[in-house]
Length: 389
Image 1 (spheres, rainbow, N blue to C red):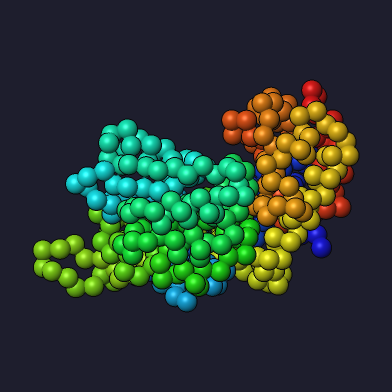
Image 2: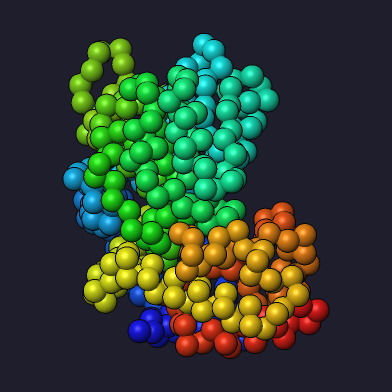
């Protein structure tokens, strides 16, 4: 089936654009326009009482949608924030401050985690062990061995690596390998949520999971969340005043915190992203789509695109350069070519209004519901016809 009609305003805004970067900035479906307008209307109509609706209706609906797609038993474990970096900062504040905190992670994490932790490592405040993502075939065993072989204060790993598309398929085995029951275990699901079917029910009691609406949830920025397992990091030192909503009584000289995911809330934010997110989830539900259906649609498009590229023999885009092979490897919703030409090819495609992105020597093509397998030949023609490609 084709779902492109639900993105008609995105296509009309620039009819000459070929957007192959759904993994970076996913197109917004048409329903988000009315949702954005609804946030504005509530702001002028309700004014100071706007927050009663946001926390009384909008946030609970958001939490319910997220919990449903992750098979969580309690939507109340979901905290919201404008970006996942807010959550990273609060999690880091929960680590020991009287010695360098011990962190286990990979060399393939996104900048919202790597930059901040690298800077704190420079200050001697963190001691970080980074497990190499490659070779991919042995990654699960190598990471689990590292997790079980030493005590760590924080274990942080992506569900889908942003620079390759590699998918950690058995999250439960990875989480189960962490031997210290007090270690904070965090899964960065930004390239997994609404792209790969994800069931957290087996680890919801143990692992944090963060993601957001900017990519495959199709809702844009400002709609991030974190599932917060009960009992872990009950009083984050980095805290905003919203974390006091529903605070339980504690010692008279202590700052109170909400007992659920609310303990990781920050302060005042723009709620319009949550409105858009809810509208997209209602669209998805109305179309009868599961995440597995979305994933199947995208995987077909990616496989067809890779096959068509191979048939054209475009310089620098040899499918042998793909880090993950669609149809053979489990992969996220983007194709990653490793080539020293990545920056040059990206620039030439951008000049031809073919939108991709690159990270160092990696060129990425990302796909979503607004792409159709029947249009793949047209996509590849545009790529091949870009001057200099």
